[in-house]
Image: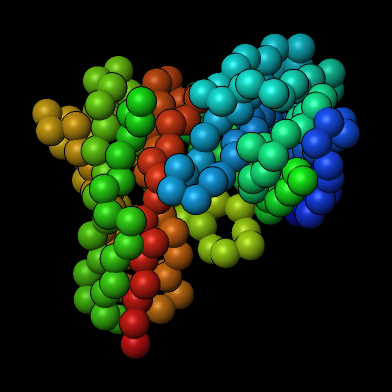
Length: 112
Length: 111
C-alpha cells in the first residue's frame, strides 16, 4: 500500500529536549516536505527536499533541521524545542513538478 | 505574507446543492493550482488540480475554475454530499513544487 508514515503520532515533551519526527515513504518519490498546521494559519511549509542530499527552507524553517540521506526518509529534527513549536506536523511526498502530494497522518507535538 | 487566500473560514450547504469554495492568489508566477481535502485526524488528500494554461478541470462531482486575470480559482462540488464535509485547502505553486497553501475552508454539508 502506498503510504507516508510518520512517527511518533503523538508526543509531549519539555523545552530543550531534542527530538526527531521520522517520515518514510514507499512510493519512490523524489520530493518530500514538512508542514505544520496551526489554528487560523493553515499549512505552512518548514523544509522541503527535491532529492537525496538536496534540502531547502520553506516559509517557517527556524528551529528545525532536516536531512535526506536516503530517498525514502526525511526526518524532522527539533534540536531545542520551544513551546511555540507545539503544533500538528505533516510530512508529504510526491513526484517532482506535479504538486500532487501524499501526506502522512500527522504528528501532534506538544512542548511544555 | 499570505500568497494564497481563502477568505471564507467556513461554509454550510444543504445536501444535493452546489458547494462553491473560493481562493485568491497574489503571485502571478504561480502556474499550477490544487485543492486538497482534509478530514479530522487525517492528513490532507489531493482532490483536483488545474494548470494555468486551462480555465476549467472536471473530475466527477468536482470542478475547478481558474480566472487568471482575477487571480482567482474556485472549486464547485455538485451535488454536495454529507461525506464531503471536511476542510478544503487551496494550494498554488510555480513549476509544481514548494506548494503555498491557503488557510482552509471548513465545509459542512447538512442532510
